[in-house]
Amino acid sequence: MSARIAPAAPPRVAHAPLVSSRSRAQRTAVVPASSSSNSSSSETLAERARASIAAVALALTLALAPAPDADAQLSNPNTRLPRNTQAALRRAVPAVNEETKAIQLKLEDAAYLFRIPSRQPWATMAKDIDESRAILLTKRDDIFGPVRENDRASAEAAYGRLDNALERLSRAAATQDFDTFDAQIASSLTALSELQIDQAPGLPFGIPTKYLDLPRLVGRAKVEIDVANADARANFGLINGDVKNQVTLEITVDGYNAPVTAGNFVDNVRRGVYKNAPLRRSETSILGGSSDVDAPSVPL
Image 1 (spheres, one colour):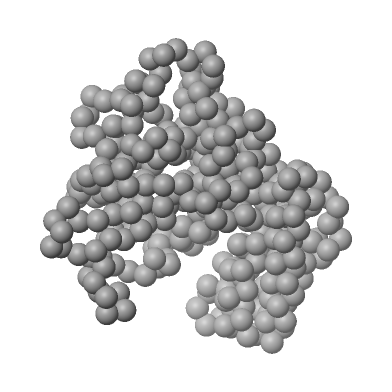
Image 2 (cartoon, rainbow, N blue to C red; image 1 turned 180 degrees about the vertical axis):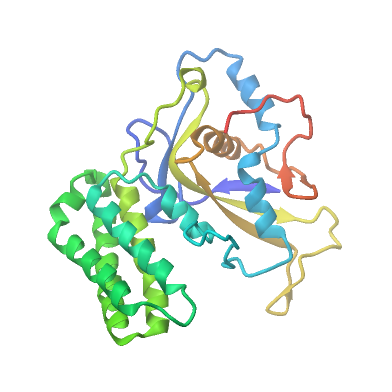
């Protein structure tokens, strides 16, 4: 197994080294350990790198399992909870602007109502969409208030995509066009999430002092992991008729929810810790790193 950071974009935190992704919505920075760290910190990092990487275990399990469509919805009796990974990541973005938060609540409500089998309340859904677009158009200056200058172009593009999706959603709700509404509600929520990331200045909470010497991820990053079978005779099956001897997994590392764990993982990737590292499979997950239970770990 080998891992790498996906192509970079401008950092979100001043004077912090860059880590990031292909997506404009997921630019990040890894804040290095403070200058008070002594020479043993590199050894500590090396030990910590060998510890089990919980941050990616679930992602690897989902990606490597023989299986359902990656977009398959999760089953939960509380249908207002996130039902897929995109929704979970979207709702994890810090809401620092009242206008976009109000739009998010209305769009999430419309998406929830849309899932009611065979009896969608189109009038209520149309009201949510029209009110969302009204906020977007009349509160433009407030929406762009928290956006930093370096993120302005990205925010403008996301704003335009959101406006376009809401316009199409409004027409779809008025005509009860099921397929168009389905596509555009997803597009609008994605564009809104990208806009909210451009508004977010960093972590919505402080890091405890005792963890300040550890690398931390401010925002999000994307990591690509190449996986091949140790047995050269084995493969991952056929894709378009061709034998697949190696697969590439793309992992979204979420520093908004777990900045220290995410920062540790991205730091390990940068230092090549996972290059040619073996994977281990348990009953519930697939792990990379050391199996030493006494190895130092980092807090979630």
